[in-house]
Length: 179
Picture 1 (tube, rainbow, N blue to C red):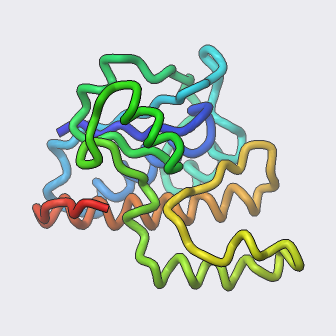
Picture 2: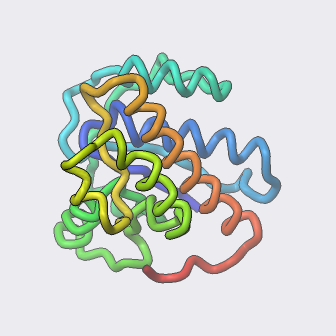
């Protein structure tokens, strides 16, 4: 099985998702046959991973210092599972490559609704009066690019949670439910 993690620039979120997968694969049995990679829909050519992504991955025991961005290519559509970081990214890939919702999924869809509500409650004070856009949890994991270390940590926590849930399902050989 081959899994591709896709975000916008392939510097922040999708490299962290690959790092989170490697952590999960070390911790769980039954995942050694699964290959993972990452790509971006609009990356800068051959750019490194973001500094904070490298720092967070290192704290997990993973090294992203040699990562270089890759553009999503037509051959990526042949992966068994393509996991995007936003719904819009999933829709772009599905429409351009005529793929179905079983092949292209939003990574955040593996995070439980309860966990999403808890995250919103935790982050709402940071947004103050502008928190109305956080009222309903969705599956998007927002891009921390240009943000603070705390923004990267929150993003990484969401990614690690989602990847962990995905890994648990795949290690238990449970079929993935359609979202």
